[in-house]
Image (cartoon, rainbow, N blue to C red; front, side, top):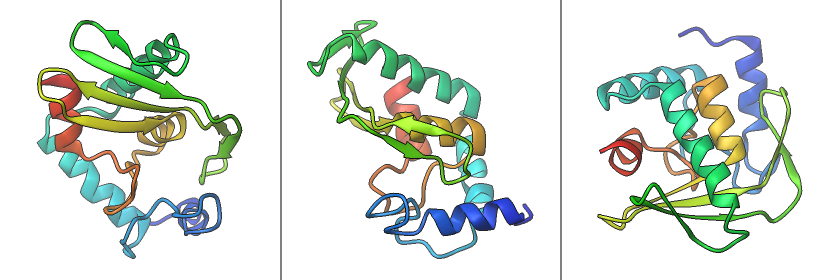
Length: 150
């Protein structure tokens, strides 16, 4: 994948202290285009598509908001707790602002959890970006598969 000027600008915006204190890249320093290409292969290896995965995350974000901060059971398999600390974050690709809504998604049968935000669902769907390794909000493909689909 070729590094475009838009990707280079987004990678600058993803650095710690620009949009968030920790940034989006974790402990990685490789070009954003290389991260995305690697993660596309990991998503494919896990049998996941970006659109289907984003739809599931967005569904859980919506359903979890019904609990008004308390956990709710969704489709009998998941426990979702959504918190809304108010405020918004800009997308590092400069294509919108997203509420700071955070969902903790727990697969009830295993207890395994994922943490996802409105922005991370957008980054996954629109930019094929699941955050760098070591990032607190990275959406690991194998974990996505286990928690959301298995």
